Length: 410
Image (tube, rainbow, N blue to C red; front, side, top):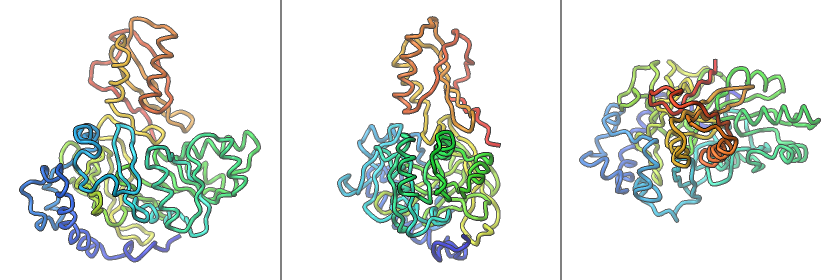
């Protein structure tokens, strides 16, 4: 799997930089046709933004701000010039954040990452990312079909039905979270079902520690990871070199000091900021809240684009649990629904290679009915199952932290 998807992946880095920044001024013109970008970029001459140094002087748009900004100017906060009806699909992700999908082939730039993971024309792909309201399922689906694969739009859950599909269609490839692939493998072993046709996997949306990589390898599955988001699609992907993630083509990735827009030196951990060259829906310096660091040199696989270490934590308190973002605003919403609760803290941990979360809530009363009600609110607000533990008032630290991510991926 050392061959490249196309010549862009192996071009000289200086050629790539010239190509990216020669396109950027026109993209900025498209962006400023939208009122929110016109305001943010007021007084800036797009023709002068032709280098990383010039780009770094533009304001950062924080993903954590998008939900509030969009509420003030539905649906896209004034950051999209084209009418919603001009897009192919319209989505919402937790936050909520509204996202359009351009009506073009492979709009999320996923095919390149799937190709690096060994997906090829004629493969049958079991896609277990959700197709319901969020773009996750369609990100992988469109990329796989662009490669000429047949896709089973399975979505998550319903393991018995998944086993039936696997045994009927014999898919050779899997897309989804690593956690759900483990559930399928374990469930098949416990119930005498056959999932041995799956030989390749592209996983995303959750941590992929070495222990899980080894477990999949023991079952004959060559699994790779990708870094993707619901608004941007594929940002970086793993290759056969297994040395970091290679940044996707036709996007500009910066790593900046958290809380600023200032690029950090190579190798220093910082926040990922992405600029897309999509004229339909450009993002200009979108800060994702995720931490990473750039790796020096080029990938041994022959691809010459920038490499990152992968996800290294959050620059803010929002975190990803089982592939879904959980934000402080959601914890606050649970508190609003249950005024009898005091201070709240959502604890995220890792047990048996699976993300688990526990909502610690200060409360005078400790009744089964209240626990059941708060548990239902937790699932309703976050779209994830979790445990609720009521503790005495004054027990939780008064440090402003409402989400504590205590997972270790060593």
